[in-house]
Length: 362
Image (cartoon, rainbow, N blue to C red; front, side, top):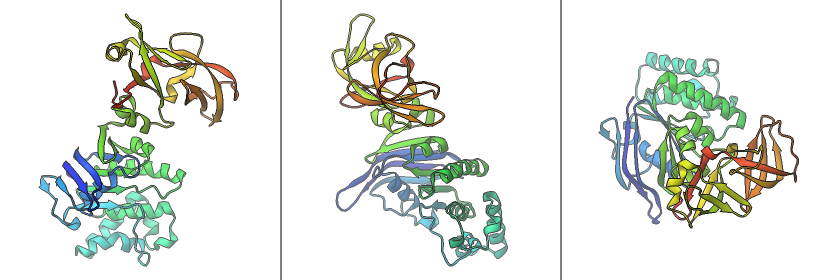
């Protein structure tokens, strides 16, 4: 396997659209790196430039210690798994998996050995004589992954490989891909728009927006210490609640205030927030950091339930605070009904503040 270095990578199209802007990444040997972001953020374009399927406007890509900017895809020693599987419909599973090796003139014995090893790893030995039309979506995806495995490449590239599968199968394939990575110890770059996939699969996760990298980190680092409002809102489901607040107070007590909401700024945050006194900030709190209040304190407020979403293992309470809709994730044993007047409390250790203009975390 090998590390991948991406340095000052840019992609501009002839119409002037700047799709990827100064991306710098170091993908470590045997790492599973996930690029995540909304449609149009530049993640797939970045992956395609690594693969050699998209021309680079400026910057440098190294696989191992070799600059590959000018190398065609077949000489980069990479294997790519696409969203649409890209299987030959007239070939059997065996022939689909073997095709790349046969094109590189491997011996027949070596081809058989590699295909059967990959089929065993993926649990598709009994499917080798079938054709793609006889397979389910999950089986086709395994064949596409197997076709990549037989190559023994330095780097695996995955372009939203699970997006065509139903929800249950996506969960199953996520687990299988994670096991596969641990077994093969490969360097992998994986593109998805699904933040759950990113969090569950990635050794590290790269969050992108408008062609730029917003933050790079381990999944729990992105969740607990987002660099800006975009990352905070993108990572986590349901999304983080945001409300614009004014900072007031003097001495030791600082308060974040909005319509119907007055929350004390936690002591450990007050030093950072104090310089913003008299200014407006954005308060962020995740739904799981909102609970039913036991009484009146500096972190509780009164509100009314708009809508309940009972999900079995939890209840999502939709309510309004500070004039904006918000969501709380509470225990399923909580007995509340729509339109009930309730008192909620925020976990002071899990509050986030963002600059209202730059949206960077404070």
